[in-house]
Amino acid sequence: MDKYLMFASTMKEKVLESAKKRLQLEMGIDCNLKCVYSFIYKEKVENNLIEHGFDHIFKGYSDEKPKPNLHEIKDYKWMSIADIFSDIPNNRLNKTTFKKIHV
Image (cartoon, rainbow, N blue to C red; front, side, top):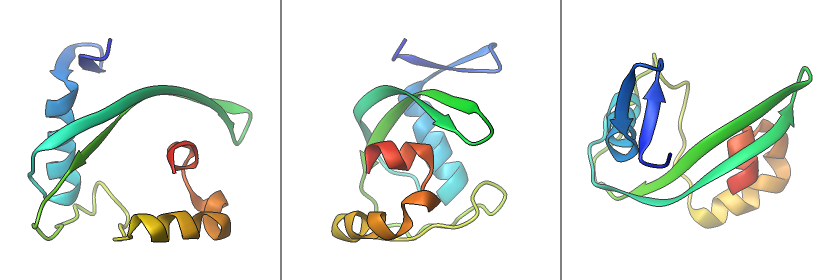
């Protein structure tokens, strides 16, 4: 299950290849990525819904300046790890379920 990601139940794609494509599509960056870990989560969200996901965390390094695709992302922000952790108490409700779990 951790080897392939399914799209529209017809296309199989290796997760690493998919992550690289999404990084290029969303941020205009092409770099080597390494899967750090995978996880499954299930959390209640608004409107009595449940978010249940199987996600992968990748890391990569690049000197390229991001060229965000505004059709894919609304905004982005560069932050150090220390700044991310100090930001959590003030903005926890503004974080996605994914960020709440992993930051």
